[in-house]
Length: 246
Length: 246
Image (cartoon, rainbow over all chains, first blue to last red; front, side, top):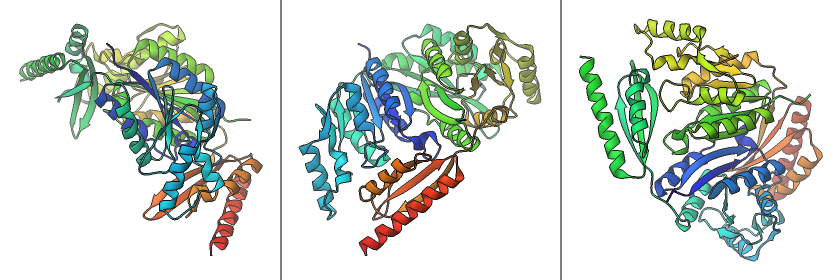
């Protein structure tokens, strides 16, 4: 059975303006690969209601899961929860369980909840909360959309809460073989190997290390036997090149 | 007149698997903001011909410019040039001027061009080359799509070649005001200011600095007078909060 698929939707003007570097996608990509969910697309969109709704509609119908980051705080530019409610055509309001989580977190810092902070307890109807230890503002899941914070430490905590609740697939194994020659000198045997071994994917990534123009070849697949076989074949290619050039 | 818009299309399995951190989007975002082209979307897609063609079609009709990174090397997983040709419905073949650039660059390293390396001189019909000093393999522009390398240093060099050739808009100014209180305590005056001053956008970004839960407020706009005015209003809000809390 093929692995479940996923998209990441990053919401925030600050990424598109170059103010902030998105680190959440990279974290999610690694975690999903580890558990066997195939991340198939990442999209970054601005703080714009219609654009967010359109992106949610397009991604949630195309993939098993959609993970979002950003836009769930208490200020006017936090519009993700409303966009998710609109995309699913459900209502949204302050929910008692979310309010209790928020009140408890603020009480630990000696504060009460302001009217603005209460916006963070607005949850689309039918959602499941994503509780985390770092922030009193919960994320939530509606259908196949998992809505999480943009602040990286809180995003990480929320991913750790959500992932164990999902059906996962076969972890995608990845092994790397380093060639100290440029891509152009190994492209032909690589292409032949990739055409023959369709159970794995073979990626070619050039690098420079001082004077060396080299290439890292990455084998990915879910079947350990096939991945090992591909690595052995690559090592044989490397030996043949080394012999040829001496 | 509104600024030109742009999308970034990052092509590569290595980003989606979490092997490689995409740094090209962040670089492009900063450069576009500086010259007054509004980056409206970033999309990351895998090394899959149909997916790349679909993304190109959707993005090039929605935005003034599309910038791509990745997939223009000599190996079997470098399929961007063919996807661009397919998206525009034009032919693609080795082109003499691209071959000359490639041969000259390899000659400087004492090498001749292999059949595989010659793949990097395959250019869609009607394209303009994007020459760079770091790599002999040129990028190219077809219509409103600018096709560049994935290797960050080469991507940076290609962006530096392309941007001066484009019509640009009003640079988007950005100024930041730091509040040493959480978002929840300033959300109301912020919302009122954002509703009143529609010539700027006001973003709110929480941070933690040791024990301080603070908020950076970012004002963005193209009119320096309005940006200054918004910053002055934010500083007045900050003073009022400081007075209220003493």
